[in-house]
Image (cartoon, rainbow, N blue to C red; front, side, top):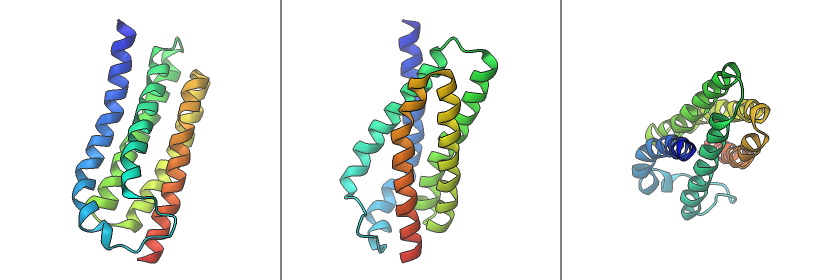
Length: 156
């Protein structure tokens, strides 16, 4: 039962980050965002919700695998710290891009997020290979989002 609680808490933490980001996204996706010039590879709006839902679950499961592992406390503390940094940057991107409507500043945030995801995946991988691998789709999606953010910045 203890592990189920850890799993639920881990997924809830990542869902909270997504929820915080969505507070700033919701208003802009129907007002400001449609007015932007977007590149031809911009995905349809309906795709973002399901993709992020799946990613947040995967991120949460990766956190759970680290938390439930028998790794030493010192390495786990480092893993939690970098996880915290990247999940804060994750929410911050939505605040800067959608809330503040600043694609330039958002690109800086997403670049830092991209770096932190790499570091997070490497640290998690040392504790649990599965935890590290679960962050690969997140890294790939943020890589794509970075290119999209850059294109929007350039086009606008």
